[in-house]
Image 1 (tube, helix red, strand yellow):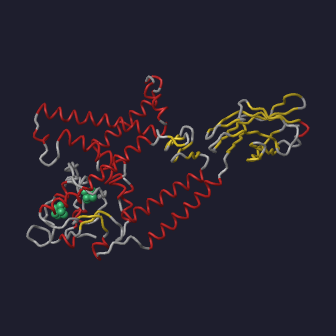
Image 2 (image 1 turned 90 degrees about the vertical axis):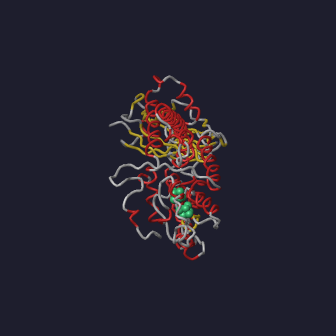
Image 3 (image 1 turned 30 degrees about the vertical axis):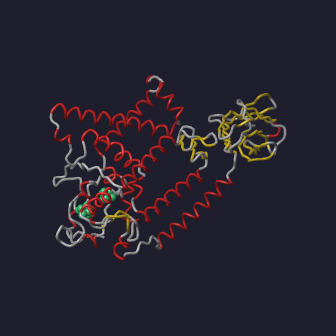
Length: 456
Ligand code: SF4
Ligand code: SF4
């Protein structure tokens, strides 16, 4: 897919100089319809990130990864850590969707919806433009002495504030807004570990956006590396129309006047005219900038555009090929399996485990007891009235330390359970017991546990 006769651009990363030192990329601010669309979409994504744990659907957060209580709220639906098969299916559907999306649209996600790009390009880079000016003809470079120091301090102080805000949003996705408010309003001495964690995350974000920046996309991000195996000649991405553009130069006949503006606005510092590259995050800045240049030189726009290599070469844009059909079929099947699994999952999940370190106790000369830990989860959207009974044995007594008879929707409850049985019914050292869990006298599920009798 290269159009460059000298492929030496592949010899080293664009943000390193000959001796391997960092070359700072100071991209110019783009202007144009794609940048405006991207700005609107980015702010929609930021609003989603901030509001998703706050907005409630049927009393559940729109999105919440409550790891402490081992439950996840996905678009208002509660999935418990115990639903391992459902969680695995959700992850599989997500992976196949990402693969299919990348095969069809290349790295579009990176430039438009990735939080790294949104925060860097729409917040941190704009703060930088505010303090230092647009990097071509930048006013900050002309500042000297104290004025320059003030500019640098102002910029980095703003970076720190935004990094702390992002940390709070990040933590809110795992704690919910109420818990976050409680954490940030209580004294540090009451929550030293939480404070240290948030401090470390804030430092991490500050380093990422103040120093690492585009290196996250070009060196660290594994998704970018996947492009090499996922893209093909029909994948849509930001691409330079070399048929129209070459030979480049004002007098050489092609539409590209070799002005270098597409490189000046590129946040990863590459020259898209070299062809599709790992570093291209499909941000569309070069499309806008080249369109502005084309307008000035009175040539048709879209010399750089969203298209495929196949589209440039043959003039036909088509995303259909064997891979897109195959991935679509797999995704469709997985979504069906996920839907069926979710609709058939039990509304009550019960686990009964022997209390660690306990065997059997003699209550009196004729009664034996064992002690268990019980955990019950109501996964339904309404409260449940639960009773526990021994299924295949008469005369036993179940005693709970906590009342489990009424369970609120999407709540878990725990109790210690003591089972007492007449000694005469325990014929062997180890007996399997079945405990039925009933809702309104209807059997919901049966748990088999092991009851240990006394040594004869
Ligand atoms: S902005 Fe357009 S005309 Fe200028 S170098 Fe890039 S592709 Fe060529
Ligand atoms: S080449 Fe164009 S689309 Fe790709 S990262 Fe650079 S400016 Fe964005």
